[in-house]
Every structure is written in C-alpha cells, then in structure tokens.
Image 1 (cartoon, rainbow, N blue to C red):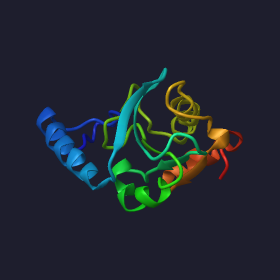
Image 2 (cartoon, rainbow, N blue to C red):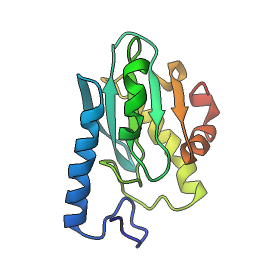
Image 3 (tube, rainbow, N blue to C red):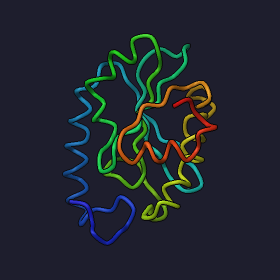
Image 4 (tube, rainbow, N blue to C red):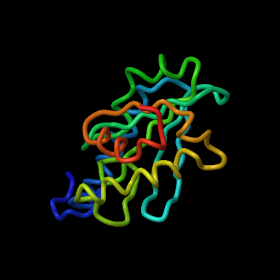
Length: 154
C-alpha cells in the first residue's frame, strides 16, 4: 500500500492510506488503557507518539523496526509502563501517523533524525530529556540511536 515513488511515508492512493489507518487504529486497541497519543512538530517532521504509564519516573522510549510502527510494542507496553512512562515513537518515513517533510532515503537523512527525536521527547509538556531515558529499539532504529550516543543511555 505504500508508494514506491520514494515519497516519505507516501501511499499509492488516499484510499490505501485510509484503509491502512483503520488497521493502524485497530492495532492500537491491543495497547493497555489508558494511553494517550500526540503529535510533536519539528523542523523536518510531524512525529506521532503514543504514551502509557505514570508521569513521575525515568521514561522508556520505544522505537520500532523499519517498516513498522508503535503498535508492534503492544506485548511489552503494560510491563514496561507499570512503573515508568513509556513513549513509543512512530518513526517518520514508515507506515504510521508521523509525517516526514523530506525523503528519509539515505543513511545521512536517517542519522539526522535523532535531533528531531530528542526534540520530540523533550517537548515541554511531554516528558523529561532523553538523557534520563532508557531507549529500546530494533532494526534500523538502532542505527539511528547510535548516531547520537550523547543523547540517551543505550
């Protein structure tokens, strides 16, 4: 259903995007309740984030694998969020509600996103800095995280 044109997060049609978003929303019914979701604007993206758990502890930041979205963390969220806030970031350029305003088609473009990720998580009303977070990631997001080792504990 995604476009092959190389457009960031593009779908082959609006109908395909709408069908995907119905399935995406349905997948999040597997997350524990209550959870919240919000968007954070940066210079290069609108990044969609799902949050679960208490507000007053060191956060856990979850980054899904390439080609996926935050719904993939549903088996882990309840346990991780029992005592800590959990932030599942929908990585821009993958099929989810985040929107990249430029193609993320090279290692350099991927490596530039940690600055936006830090801006996303440290947003004034959403949580503490990444320096206080434990980052859990898989696949290409491990490369993205490694590009900014000074911003998070790995």
